[in-house]
Image (tube, rainbow, N blue to C red; front, side, top):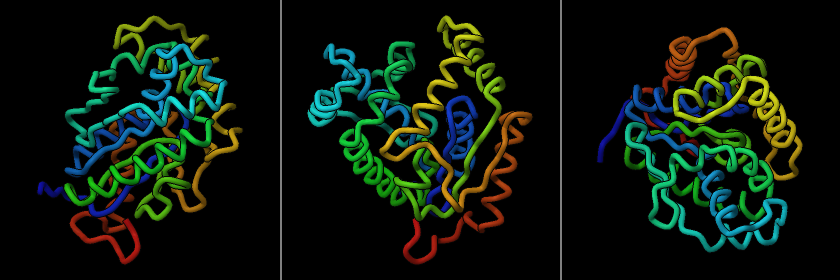
Length: 242
């Protein structure tokens, strides 16, 4: 067993473009903890739906697809791998087709139920392996790990988030425009915040961190301060808490 410094679960929630993925991976690596990108899991289900030629708004057909696929994802922050039926799909799930359809797929209650069970199993396994895990998504603090030792809710202006997403797309070879990306960001905000099943919202006990004027190092520094305030390095989580 490889144990890191973190004891317990850090839930990192927030809308697209707030820096969740980069911050969560770096935080996990810094603390020697596990890392789980729950959004990648919804994107993988979405890819399976699109490959099957299913309309993402057909909830029953989407649910049936989610029930029959095999989805695997690593919890290693350094070596990330997402597999759909043993095929690595980490790059394809970031494409525009998946981005446009993922909100509809992730709104299907049966999909959320299935992935919630999978995510909680992965969290429990990573806590055994590493001692702790950083989990990022949109409902971690409210639905997936409501007893997390630390809950963070990242925010940023839509302009800042659109700029980050456009820069990320360019760095990874995906064509996008700032105006189009801003429209996508705001559309996903509306859809994710208004869905009936586990809508995007901050947990009541989450600590808000506005990343609009912070770089990644600044966000990481602030979260590490919170980790130390909660004494989550090298100490066991309290009874009944991850």
